Length: 259
Length: 314
Ligand SMILES: Cc1cc2nc3c(=O)[nH]c(=O)nc-3n(C[C@H](O)[C@H](O)[C@H](O)COP(=O)(O)OP(=O)(O)OC[C@H]3O[C@@H](n4cnc5c(N)ncnc54)[C@H](O)[C@@H]3O)c2cc1C
Ligand SMILES: Nc1ncnc2c1ncn2[C@@H]1O[C@H](COP(=O)(O)O)[C@@H](O)[C@H]1O
Image (cartoon, rainbow over all chains, first blue to last red; front, side):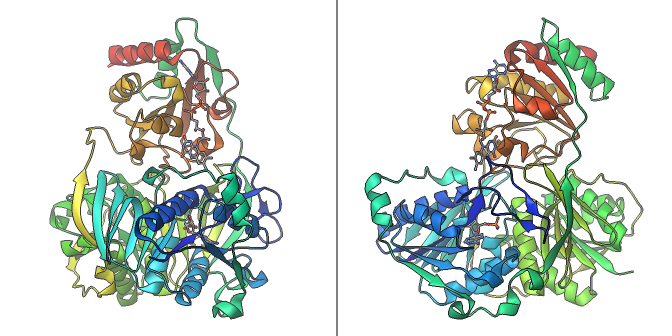
């Protein structure tokens, strides 16, 4: 079974994140890049499926030069190879344009399954999995907390507010994962060394068959018109509990008409 | 005036609060038309009319037998038929997916997790854990916008809510992921986390899988219960109640955090709450910086006293 796992580099949520005033896009230079956390769960799931069913795991990432670091890190968890779509014309692409670019690359390779995270920590759009299924006309098996493959049948548990839905489809399919699905492994020293030699294929727009007018800031389907720091919240009241903390809190809630 | 399509969220015919919020937002833009999938639209007519829905397009329940795609086909078809000015859906995990697929079908832009939207379709986002506010617009096609529940206050207005049945031919591609079973877990009588007016959350400070101190306070306030990731990862509370960056985003009138430090990833899911209250034994906990009221103390002492006081005042 050949699996492609989608990995996005995002700014570390532990550092200060900003937009760049020049074009209102994410300022990637100002914070460290890390693998989007849910993508580690996607990689883990792909590796577990490979361990059960054989085949190959390929990492696919769309991003600038910097993203190579995250691709190496992803490879050090165990995937076999990677594809890096990198082109200056992609700068400022919105979620749907990115999904389109990913879809175009996926059209050039043979796969049984695409595994991705259900949401990225920077964009938080949560649309890429659904949009890919739409572009590629493949089954949308998103928000998976469990995946089972049996021959060409695939079944997932799709997380819902009330529990989960069991969803069935035929491969090839698009699976996005939620963090409940597994515990991502830590790369071993041996794997980290091995990752350095794993092939990373570099693609630009032309090589991937992507029309330049379908991606990038100038053609984006959405536009950020302005941004500003959120107004600071007015300093609140802080009281130390001296045996009456609960009562003081009740008084505050009463004043605010919650009780 | 152009129609604005609002995809209704309902559980077995009972309309969720977010739909009233979306109808309110839709009225700023044009004439709200609710889009109902499944049975029960007759019974819900009054509650949709109450928030200004002029029309209710209803589609058969079988659309729910497949993941997301049939709803996107329905919305795209309605946009084409009605030349709608915009499509509004709720920014739940599924709502965002419906928005994404609909936008791809229409060749439009999509904005998700929006906290406000103007008559001119300028959408506001709260990003980076609430630290930054952005304004965005869709540049291409009919805007598809997913609005965060509890972000826009619902205001009633009279509407006709004329029901119009829509026939739908689902494509084969839309039927490729079939829902074969729905499994209900951990049903409680508490309000749903993203819809609740009040949320009481517990973190590592709760100290064990005995969450009763959190639940009792929640029940005294008619609130939903949430949890930090530390509490969820420790196995103290089920995953679907996690608040934060990789959990639910909530925006209640009142958020009470018990034994939660306020890491940026937690704040990402609750920072737009109107009032924030914290109980924490550490005066340096970052959550205190954004709290309207905080008690420095042991939550196991403060919380039961608070719950008792609330019960007394009832
Ligand atoms: C990519 C990523 C995504 C993440 N997503 C999320 C997310 O969605 N949601 C989330 O919550 N976290 C998330 N986290 C984790 C986050 O960084 C924190 O680790 C987590 O929020 C901490 O939970 P906590 O506040 O309960 O625990 P802690 O940080 O350990 O804080 C416990 C607090 O309880 C207080 N306390 C202890 N005992 C008592 C007592 N008896 N009485 C009163 N106070 C007491 C302590 O003073 C402390 O402030 C994410 C992390 C990463 C890296
Ligand atoms: N630039 C990208 N390169 C590779 N994968 C991506 C990219 N952007 C998004 N993804 C994938 O899509 C998932 C959801 O992202 P999003 O919809 O942007 O929140 C992520 O967890 C990734 O797996």
